[in-house]
Image (cartoon, rainbow, N blue to C red):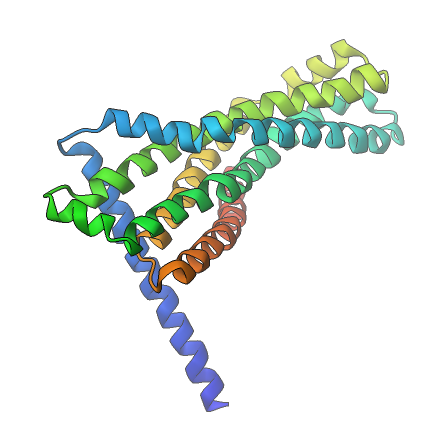
Length: 256
């Protein structure tokens, strides 16, 4: 029993220590965004890596998510004679929850793992040390642009996800199942309020920053060669997904 308690305490201390290190890492990375030299080209390159190259998977995921929501929602609402509320159900589900969460998980799986692998390889091949030797701050050159790009790209991807999901719901609900087009969009306009949209935006900002922070942190402190890069990439995907779901609960409670 004493050994078990000791192990639990050791893991709890490690968790607190890593959380503190990650917070300091984030603050340093964001602070460097306000200090010269500014690197707009690097930020645009990272937006392309994180945002543009994730657009296709976001479109596919959003389309099928909206179609499934419409299909399930239609047969559920039909039991109560409320098929006209299908647009409201699809829009609110996407804007409040499904859009930000699924976008975050998809970005963590595609872009987060790529960011960790990139920085991890730079660490084990001593490229980060070479930047430091040349008087180039690796935090400012490598990490800061990725954090800023995450703050910009993930909310935009979330907006694309929401719109595409609503159109996917329209395809199934209106064109396939025969729900009135007017009631689909009218219910959506009446039910979606600014608080729902603002909540989705805040969630996407927090998720984007969290995903890229975890990816950069795990890559920056990679050890043990190629095996370390593999472990860091795996940890990034798992930890990012868990943190997205945890933040979703916290933020949903706040916006209720």
